[in-house]
Image (tube, rainbow, N blue to C red; front, side, top):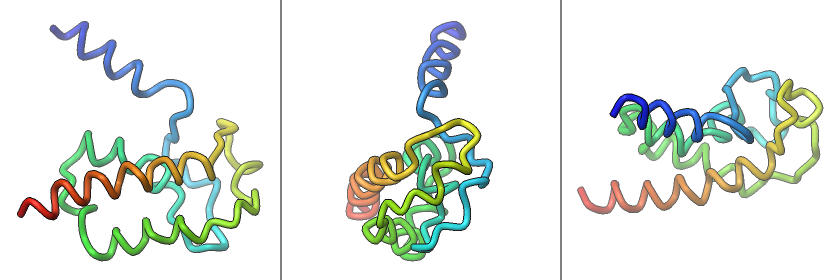
Length: 104
């Protein structure tokens, strides 16, 4: 049972995974990159209520204003595709937000 949990975590936390270091910041579009790149993981692993708020919904909506200027990418020590990650996480965030907030 513990081995299965470890393997699940290992699979989830490898590859194109943001560690939240913040070196990619600041974003000219005001996107909180160090959270936006890993928001779905945050919602699935931590108490989500603090991130399912109007304030965080607005912050995540800033992703729509990403111009893919590329300022974040050379700063990332893990060479992540940050614009791709934030857009993917926006889709996941909205799905979770809708599911959890509309069922209250």
